Image (tube, rainbow, N blue to C red; front, side, top):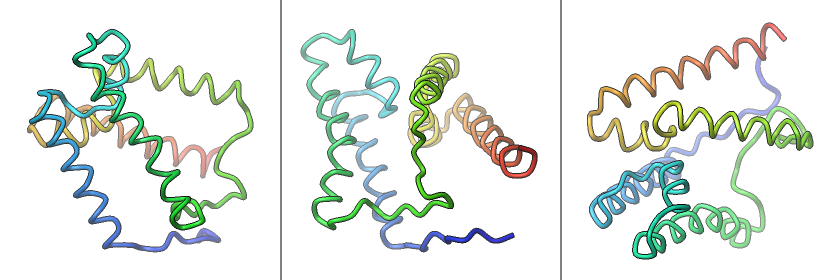
Length: 150
């Protein structure tokens, strides 16, 4: 069965976005000697000395402010089409537990998808290759169970 809403293919926007993510990862690596993994940037920011804190806050603010800027410029949220009326749950307890599970997973996996997928694979890290394979396998199994079993 085909989904009722099909996401529009945007090759140029996707290419530009991918290049911008890659450039930001390179800039963080060359300017600060750090991997641009979000979990490392945020958790490291909690305990970082003042000299290492400012760039972390600027990076996180950029992640938060970019969608808001897109909304202001386009008078609409960036193009994400979902199959449901709302893609955000109103189950706050469930969302909090899911967030804690993700946080635990990033500690257990020594990094998040951005750190392993963008930066780790770019550095040819075998550990990151295994982590990304595990992320993708788990995501595929989750979708299969949610779509076809539950």
